[in-house]
Image (cartoon, rainbow, N blue to C red):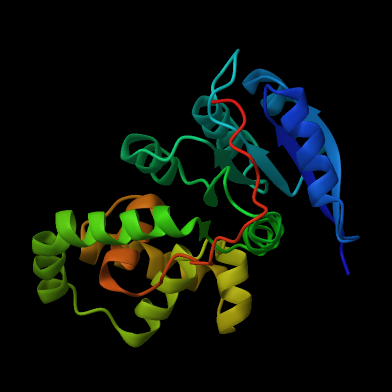
Length: 233
């Protein structure tokens, strides 16, 4: 089994130390570095190439959102999993728009954190239950009229629907091509057709559409006791 390399980014040492103990309880996850600022998180990602960055939002010298934006632009192979005490709609929407692989609140249990790391490393999305509920309700409400309009004119083919699901699950063109047994060029054509038909021009928009349309569901897991204490902001 391949070891999942993780970079922890949080400005509180006690939180990083606690997270290190938690994530290294199983042998398949290894903490390769710790960053106490957003700038350090970006620099260490470029140096260490971790599979997953567990990122807080409130940090000095680039907050977690700014750091996430830079990491996803300069190190697209690395997945960013937000772990924050903030769970307000503004932050949730910003994280989704940025393209982060997941968003957990700090009350999340250790078991769920470990599962989230494994899931996002495998190219899936993972959100805390309350955040998943908000996303589903919000995008169904705000996108319902536009969604119906797009659906009427879209007429997606079965293959396009499959490609849409795989894109929304975070799969890259190469992975989609491998799973469907088609060329990368064909995947790119399907992606282009999807964006044209749905009048959506980025992956974040396709993901929101897929959630609102029920094509995919965000990972919803029960929150149990013994969770991570909401230390810090």
